[in-house]
Image 1 (cartoon, rainbow, N blue to C red):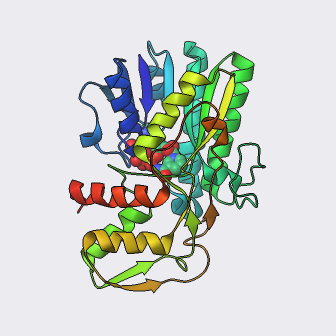
Image 2: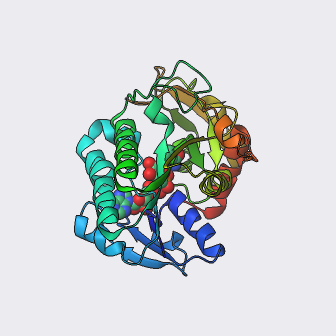
Length: 306
Ligand code: NAD
């Protein structure tokens, strides 16, 4: 049995689909705080539960051999407004899970970390061995998760795969810049508010590439702790994302920029990850950032998100 935490969320539900298509028995634990029950694969066992409670984590791990720990509060903006929420859902929940794994003898964990652990890296593209100096509470919470996982692997003979994602986008995504733009334009097609000056320049990876990268790494890397960046090989500016959304929605609104180089406190304005480590194992992304953005707009419009 494989346990997927956050398996009713955007990335988690795609991981669950892939595991089930490969014939695995899958259990999902999710508190549905940002997940959606309709994303859940019907062949997965579902526990509606909260990992902030240790006993829930221990119960979910019964007969489990491997954990994909994807549950978290993924919102960088929330992390500057309510740090406690980030601490509880990202750090405490990860600690509870690791402790429950130790007690139950479960020794394999896959963890979804983030590019924000690097903070404002001066080296672009940023490789995995670049210093980690997060500038958001969210980035710090993920780095804390990575550190706890590495220590449990070395202390209690576990194995881990840690993935530092660029912006992941695609079917079922319900947060982030593309989702925000579409919602705003559905409400007011004449004007689009863009957070920051629109020059933020980041890398976006399509969900299918993200899932294929994770599975490739888990199959092909076997150290005690395996850390990989996962992203596409180029960037796209926020202003260009706004243009693509408008093109796909056939709208021509006035752009209103809130100004400043960041969209919000803790926003890293320039991000591109080096993916050479994963490429050396034979993986390549199928889509660049702009293509991923356009496909995602089409996906979300087809899903009828509002
Ligand atoms: P999401 O919000 O769709 O998924 C998170 C899921 O975790 C949700 O279903 C939510 O209900 C669940 N959850 C949250 N707190 C929980 C708790 N205490 N107990 C049980 N379930 C809980 O977000 P996502 O975009 O799919 O992100 C998935 C993971 O990938 C997160 O760990 C996130 O930090 C990481 N990540 C995402 C991106 C991205 O661009 N989407 C980038 C970097 C890292």
